[in-house]
Length: 192
Image (tube, helix red, strand yellow):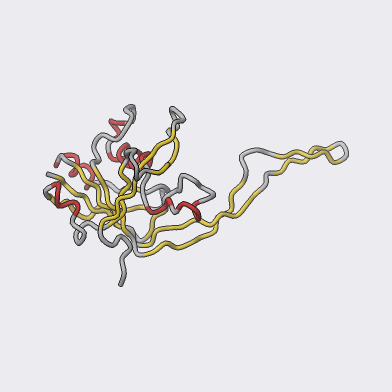
């Protein structure tokens, strides 16, 4: 059995792992392993000292559209120039275009009712603290029903490496590349 917790909100931002090149990869359509692990650790803080995803057994992410928004960023380092006897310090800035999901729906799958009930009592954020998704309900289903295109449409990145996989980021602890393949169930982008 799976216990599915449904989360909704007016908007949500997913930080693309490529950050500045998301217009090429469209990585905002799926949650990376680190994002799912972060959501899990927010819901279950007792897992903070453990590596990997333990309780979330799957997810589906759908939305109505992506709103492209511009964001000003600054470089981490400072540039210095000497003008007379003074040193001038400045940080270069640039403008990035990033997408925000409009009306996202996230279904999280748990194989334990107690875990689902803990999740049902808490909000989550896809990446930014101001992009809050609130829980709506728990639905008990057979594991095979999670593939139902009508009930649980969405994007899900399957965290494994095979012939369909592509690079989805880097493990911060080991520096190794992480891979996954995109499972598209039904119509993940809602039409009205």
